[in-house]
Length: 347
Ligand SMILES: Cc1c2[nH]c(c1CCC(=O)O)Cc1[nH]c(c(CCC(=O)O)c1C)Cc1[nH]c(c(CCC(=O)O)c1C)Cc1[nH]c(c(C)c1CCC(=O)O)C2
Image (tube, rainbow, N blue to C red; front, side):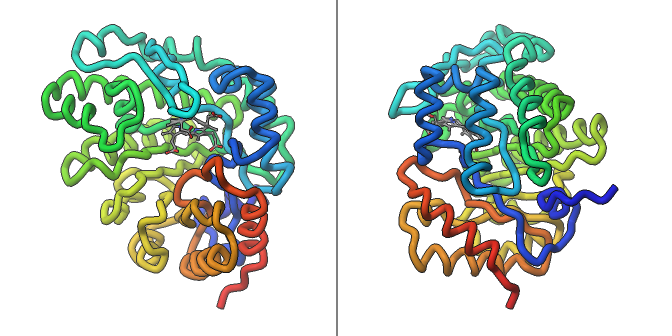
């Protein structure tokens, strides 16, 4: 049966007159209703593991704005936790984890099939969402890409240049490869279980892909995304995969074909006209408005939104930001972006 869900139509390669739209971090601290539910949960991780409240914050931006997709509320760092890492969040600073730098650290991780013991509440969130979402809204599941997840597991926190992960990659390559392999296999199990629970699309977030260059990019960004996509396609034919190798630059070229992903998400460092010619020729793209417009608003927001709609109007496109919306964003600017996209007419 032909689907009427616009996100699924774009992911199947259809060029639509108006691009469907959702927004990275659409459930988040820029929304007062999110902050209220998070306070009710106590802290961020308790919110992630409470299926009723996680479903509630996933639904909030759908109710307020009518986005075409909902993204499961969870975090990429739940997988390291499920593999046995300690994880906590320091308010105002970000995530902290136990560190892992050698073979012994990798050997101490839990086996891949143990991840469900920790991640079961996430699957329950998905089941609730499939009952509660409007019929036209697509549910997107997600996980972090192995390289990005590894950068946090190795350093124990976010790092500006991913130096500890690069040091392990170069200094202890066998242990590093074993870590990437473990995360890759855990991610396949996790995303597969998300799909079994009702996720209609999955997205792989490689937020730090841009710090891998040349052959290292091919080996640690492209290859794990290819392995995950291949395994998911074998188990769940017809479930689309979105890959987000953030700041990949020229490495965006050919990423659809190299990984088998149905859609490549673009950050805002690439010009949409360039990406239309070099990347969208191979399939659906998602992106790529700069998140700062959600803080600054005004005519510049409208102009850049229309430029992106126009540049990608000859092929399959899902409108989104180039990265997550920030807590200082104004909810009115999100409404302005959505109005602009929905009133777009191709020149
Ligand atoms: C690197 C990364 C993480 N998490 C994620 C990534 C990849 C995407 C990206 O590059 O942004 C992905 C993520 N994190 C979150 C989602 C939920 C779905 C969504 O609305 O997009 C998704 C898809 C919720 C979250 N994850 C986090 C929040 C804020 C936590 C809070 O409520 O205090 C949310 C809504 C916390 C988080 N989680 C992470 C960090 C570094 C932080 C702290 C930074 C910050 O405070 O903004 C790890």
